[in-house]
Amino acid sequence: MKKTFTLLFFLLLGKLTAQIALPKTISNEEKIYGLSKFWSEVNYNFVYLNRIDKQRWDKHYQTLLSEVQTTENDYEYYRLLQKFCAELKDGHTNVWLPKNIRQLILNAEFGDYRFYLKNIDGKAVISKINLSKKEEIPIGSEIIEINGIPTQKYLNIHVKPYIATSTSHILENTAVSELLKAPIGTTYLLKIKKPNQETITLRLSLKKTLEEKTYPPSKKKAVVDFKCLENQIAYLGLNDFSDPKTSSIFIKKLPEIRQAKKLIIDLRNNFGGNTDIGTSVLKYLTYDNQLQSSKSSSRLHIPTFKAWGLIYNLKAKDTLQGSGENRKMIRQAYLTTQNSFFHEFPYATIENHLKKSERIVIPIAILIGNYTASAAEDFLIAANNQKHITTIGEPTYGSTGQPMLFNLPGGATARICTKKDTFPNGQEFVGFGIQPDIFVKKSYQDYLNNTDPVLQKAIQYLNKGK
Image (cartoon, rainbow, N blue to C red; front, side, top):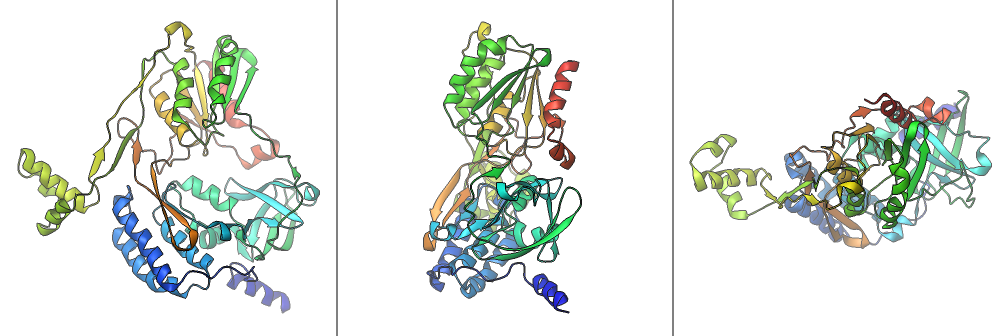
């Protein structure tokens, strides 16, 4: 009977509430102001406002006006704002907690245990653990229940609704990595399945882990990885476009790259940085003297056009009426009421002044993945029309733009994406990711066997000469 009661208790609560004392500094007036500030800035500046259900968004705002006043502390208030923000489904639009609260939050640290979680085949897999626990809980173990709730159900109820991201694959990855993220003292009942199918149950409370060593050991990725593979294939891992050394190291490796007949470029660990750094590399790998870049736009709001659109109750069919300037004005008035009138920024290609003799144009396979992001995605856009280049792997991060930052009451920060970026032809990738030419995904079994099917596919593809 006692066992049944305990399980029911956990089912009723996503987490136990025995947490560290959280700040209570924000007044109800400030809570309402912060919510209204965020809602207002989104309405005026969010570039993808035309993608959301505006009536639902406004209705939720009205509901939150009373809900934020019932929050017991600053953390609960910000969580409501984060949930509200997540409805926008954009990775460059966020509500960030202030430092005084962030330092009270832990992610899968339980004192004697520390887990690093990774989404593999839809499973919450322990990909790394503190060294002293590697025998007790082997790498590859899966968390299958939290507080009596199956992991996927728990994620859907307690984690995903608070994550702001543009793509479904990053939502899944982030949700798993933040599955056990909460204030210090939060207690979980975890059911874990080991690779040998044995299951164990642990009751753990979030507490700082002092043990620093992990298994596998943490390894810092080199800015550039280079090695020669069989059959005159060179491997070039470009892991960071924020470090200027990327360009200089690449230049030093050029003599070795010239000896290769084929090239693999790995961007799977490249979270971006400076677009110019990536471009400086790509210039050597194409005969084109003009490299394409992304096309950008931002919402253009002129209130009078919105007034005209509303006064005359303009519909889409009305944009076909009239001629010349009159038709343009009708179109702008209608689109403004739909939050869909955009200013197009001037488009410019990137000049490539390298001598033809300096360039290396050979068959190239670019490895991409969910964390190929930002400036690395710009690299792919520039390389998109190159017939000798093939992309292999998984969809990229799929979120970019120009965020506008502003402060919220209590020290939090919010940002809103104000710029839309697409391929030069208007093809969108924000919200989807740049899709690979050849899709290959690492499976749970690949992970256990420590194999890299994406790299293997690239080698196979280049060896076949297809």
